[in-house]
Amino acid sequence: MPVMLEPVPPMLQGEGALENLGAHAARLAGEGAAVLLVADPGLKASGMIDAAAASLRAAGLAPAVFLDIKSDPTARQVDAGAAMAREAGARAVVALGGGSAMDAGKLVAAIAPGSAPTAHYALCAHPFPAGALPSICVPTTSGTGSETTRVCVIGDDAGAKQWYWGAELRAQLVVLDPALTVGLPPHLTAATGIDALVHAMEAATNRNASPGNDVYAHAAIRLVMRHLETAVSRPADIPARAGMQLAAAFAGIAIDNAGTAIGHNIGHALGSLRPIHHGRAVGVAMVATLAWNVADDDGAFAAVAEAMGLGRDAAAVPAAFERLMRATGVRVSLAGEFDGVTPAMLAAQMARPENEAMRRSNRRAPDDADMLRFAETVLTQR
Image 1 (cartoon, rainbow, N blue to C red):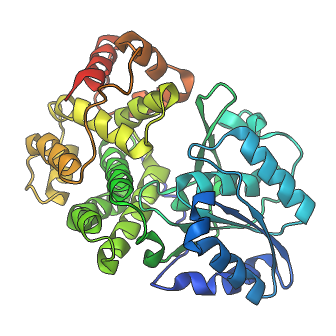
Image 2: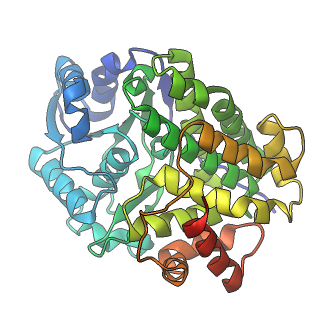
Image 3: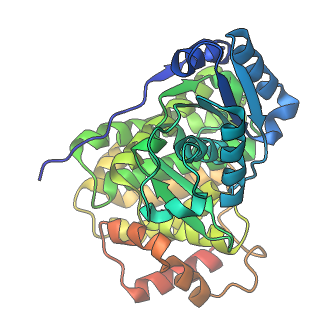
């Protein structure tokens, strides 16, 4: 069956690329236009937000700054951002930060031309309004790949993560400045890097994988294996930071075409039950499920093993993945963090509609007994 690969957003990479943000935004928004800058408030002390706004002003643009974003943003926050975009008359949106800021910024750009609230568009219940604002993504972490996807994950009022997708969410430009990731603490560098690796591994091994898309997925795997430990141990190493930025962007392209699988099913379920970094959550899930997955390999995991530098040995993948988790300081054990959550509760969350597609896309089909066993392993592994 023919496989269609989605367009890849234009990407610019280079140390100091943020300085030219205004010129790029002006080409998209028009001379003298208002622009909404959606940014992670935690970046304020670093000077990145001020630098981005200054670049926009220097290009003759009028930036309005929206900072009401938290990790795992909510529909209400996106609603507030869209309201600010409408009030300012914004003709483009710039999203600066990690996956949360980029997801929120992309969704603000998509819904601002309409009047319906964010939740109206969850799970493609309704089409996005016509005339989505152009968006620019400037990632300050290297993990989510949101900069290159047509997907956003936003929390609803009950705390459950809801999916939004469509061509309207694709950025018109991705600006990769590795200097913006230098200040990311080692534990977040590690967790976001694991997220990129899981994206690439799942995109290359699930039911939607294709040879064309594997080019991006396998490249991302090679980049993570080459650069993550260096980026964690030597945070100021620009080549390592640049390598991880490309890994995240390529892995984003890979999941944009193929989606994810059981690791993300479990990871999103965990995040709906207790606060946990998404990269760590999917990494913990992969440790719990990889041995089961590779036992039924048809060659996809053997190709992943080769990209990891292990030869075409699928059986070597689980130990190599866990070694990287532990070597970069990403905790595998959830002891003390999910007290009160039973395997049955986690399995029920894994079975919710918003997580079901990730279960179905896993190449080896898990039954309900498998899902319960995975939940127990995730909660008890050390």
